[in-house]
Length: 118
Image (tube, rainbow, N blue to C red):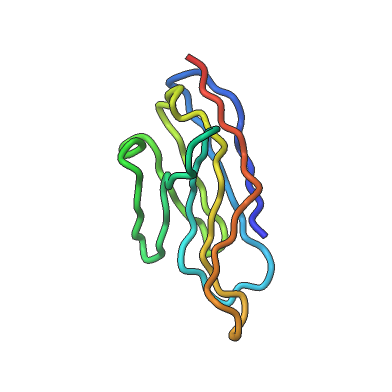
């Protein structure tokens, strides 16, 4: 299970921080990250943390968003200089293995709304 928090409403130029914690039995974790989705569009990658300090960002958020992890099971997304086009439902994602016999599978959070007003 992935539990998200930190969404909300903010004016353009403002900041928000999202957090997500993975719970349950976790044998190993390949990645944690954030995706976002707006009505009628496909879910898109915002940022991901691959472990070992490796990160990946969508071009639209580079220089404004920062993804970080304080341990292997919690990930944060610091969103600065927010724009109205950042408005979306943000989903936490983790690719992990729960047991020695289970596959490496993607898991999703329930989503948290971020609204940026102009």
